[in-house]
Image (cartoon, rainbow, N blue to C red):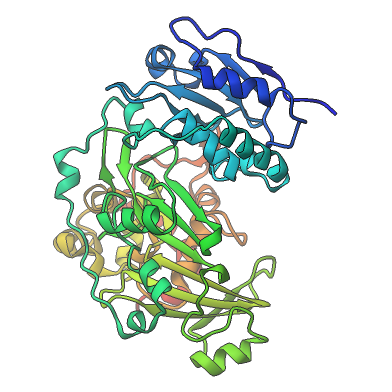
Length: 474
């Protein structure tokens, strides 16, 4: 059987090979391929300039690659400075940049436990090899040195300290509801960190102290969410800065990184407690209904098209409705916790967004309560005294969301499909039908529309009225 390819004899110019890496490389080279996970080679090379031309000099000066993953991602050893040990970081094939471990020793120990959070290394088929690695590390008395948590993404951006603006962001108030108080202790503890910033003490206490995992220190536009899975505890968390909720604005850490929030959690049976008295293996929807009452609603299951087959029960866990608990049943029970978040209609607004906003304002499709700070402008647009693009520029810095629309049954669902080319609905196709087409900035077809004038809105209105007839205010 083939062995792993290992080539660690010579470090790139300006770097030295840590003795531990040389030793473990010699051991890895004797292992059968696949027994330690899936990677192409354990070999040293300078970081390709193409990964990030702007940061190439910094990366090549302070870091080098030592492990190549099948998707083209690289694991690198990087010098954080300040006498800290070299850390292990991931350079993802899609531009991700994150810390894997604060030292080579810590990385090897995580690898031996299948806890690197890199799927190819944590693969279940590599269990036997990881046990052997754990034995080797124990024989070599390898222990992780104490080291300050290293934020690779922030380091790469040129700063590692949060600016004053980050400290000034107000933390939402979370007043528990009666349902929150009914949750079992472990589930309640988990729920209590939802919506909190990654740098909050209670988040660190839970993620590190209870789950034994690391808190993601930052996210970025290339990597806007980081999952932290603690399978043994029945918990998987999502950290993200991109929550579409005005009470959870992005918090800049550096010019290109953010301090994330705990935005979502899956709760699984290994947590060791039921949720609101519902067993983890209910026999039927009827059993759940007997315990919780009628479902809050139904939605389509995966692969079921538009058929509403999945029953779900929702509960607010704080009086402001920031954090929600959901139980759903479709053959088995699913339990999630989440921060209330809208769905994105258009992240980067353009002229078509302005045209739709102008149209929607005149048809009563917008939720006026979402624009209190721009009430006069919204009224002016509704009276055709200002263009929709003015509201987009002033009130929608993070784009148009479905909760900017009226809370009317089915409206946000149709709008979401229309903006995202789903269910044979598409804003671009409708506007091309109205205005004709031309090549867009990325080579795709786009409508011939340069300004969201009222003449343009009037031209599009007959077709849009057909799309939104059910919800147009009379």
